[in-house]
Image (cartoon, rainbow, N blue to C red):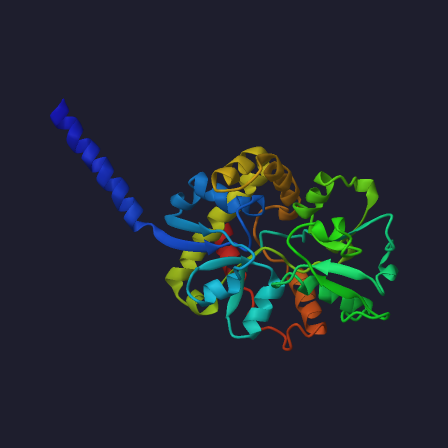
Length: 323
């Protein structure tokens, strides 16, 4: 019996080794640190969805000093998670980014102000200090201020912009009258800090129609010309969206998988996952052209980009992924 078993095991090991060697490698660069904001990708890897598509995916966390656009431009990633404002600005500067899928159908960005403060409505912004993140996260904010006709250099006819840290301290320490938060992250940091929902005035970008597309998947236009690379991205998007669908349907398990990938504070990840699920919609990854056009127009109006972008997105990947 031993003589029969050994060759079978050796054959199985050889097959596994061959499959591992044959898998196409994909490097994904995230926009921020490991958290439930990116749960779909961690779930797709943990559940074997990438492996089933013949892919070996390396997920690289981001951080305050990591710009996904620069990473992919330098050859450090095949595909990145990015906000469209940053992606279109980078494209105009020579980084040929193309949106190949849009998992997030709604924006999670909000501006929040204490109800006992001076700001109750948009009409109250003038003359006050508003906090916003930079590194490409400021584009929706500037587009909104431009829509309101408010200057962003300070003074009585505009607003003073505080370059906000990636936390809620500027509001707690009263450095700003309002600060930027994400529905799934910093908003809950304020709640944990002692604020009650009824004590906050919330300006939600999506609810106001001021949302610009967030957390899309972008690849290089040059590499997409290669049919083999395009096929790899089709498989990557198909598996990723399967991961997102599973994460939306299984919030707590998805949060646990994120924790295994390096996430912090499981209760926070569970809460984040439940909020992120509200932004995913039906998990098909398809880009809504109307939202794209609104995003591009807002960036043009603010002169964040100077020319109407051409070829900045493709539906070919998601169309093939669905099939």
